[in-house]
Image (cartoon, rainbow, N blue to C red; front, side, top):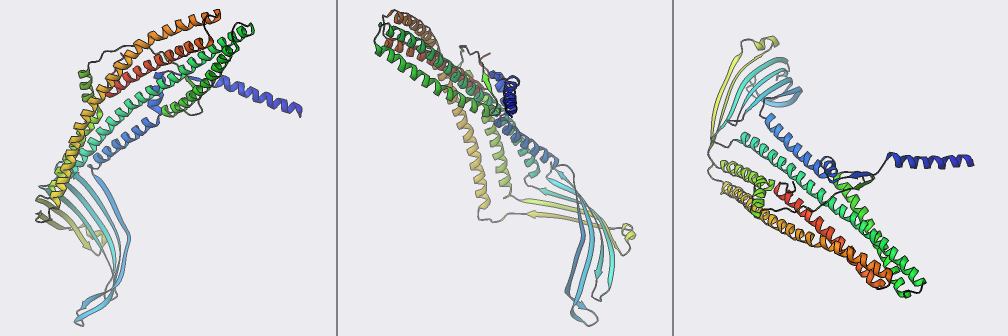
Length: 482
């Protein structure tokens, strides 16, 4: 039994080691994270399905303009009731039991005519019927019919063409939305990647501070034991060491939390282990404000979608207005049919069936309802035009704002990058002076905080600059870091 327990422990240990070997931690660069996000993230999949929906809707609209075939079968159609009929033998109305059982098939070929808004149809019908007449006798007959029908609206709005145009415009909007979603994903993944990298560097900076404080504390303890400094200075460094360790634990927890958020953003399983690597550097750019605004106004999908909304609203105005105008409907029918008691004879010596109807519709009085509906559609058109104008102004404001961020963060990077070197040099000198006993532990602690702050502020400024440049690329659809 003891040997069995030992084997279990050994097996578990072997499995643990095997997992470490087989499942190494994944290391991601920004480009690799973007590649994953553009395939696996929730946002890109949602945008893709929205695009697919619009594509299928357009395909359905186009297929709806092709010939459709429908078959109807009554198997059977049965009725039986008392009906009042005139009896020629008695010369008065009497009730008789009348019924029939019918087996009928009907087939419809419909072809929409998109250019004229009409519909051409070919209709075939065939049935056999058993009838129960007033005398109680049962008879059977058959009927065949084949007819060509045309239904052509005149002087009115072309709904078929408008519906096709709407589907095409909606597909264009979905394609633009998909492109915009890709841009948004690239920016948000870039932003989250840099924030995660910033958190990682903060962990490294804080860990370095802990090591520096640990070294200074050990030096202070040795000096205190040798009677070179007062106990309070050693205690001060011990407090600083505990504080820096506590800060390191908080920053590491925040780093782990950001990693989980990043996994959800790009579409990685929460159980997957990963780390990130990046070589970030300061690359100053010069951007002409007028050119950036022009690029944004030319490329932003929001403006193009508002233009599409204006077109759709214009279609709605015309469609609504047409309901209050004079319209006509031309209906024409030509058919061949036959009724006979013998099935094979219903296809011989067919009779002709012809009809033409021209219906004219003249709206006379609706209490101003159509006029109000047109005014409502026109108001929606004005809203669409106003939205486009407002969006143009918003885009211009966004570009000016992001350029101000770039200029401000650029200046901060240039200033703070020099402060790091100065703070590092000052700290190195202070360590030597502390070892020599010319400064106190408090002075050393203050200089260490300045070095940590200088590194953190310099990193933050660089991240802010890179994010501002990425935001400018997102808002202008142009890459300024080439």
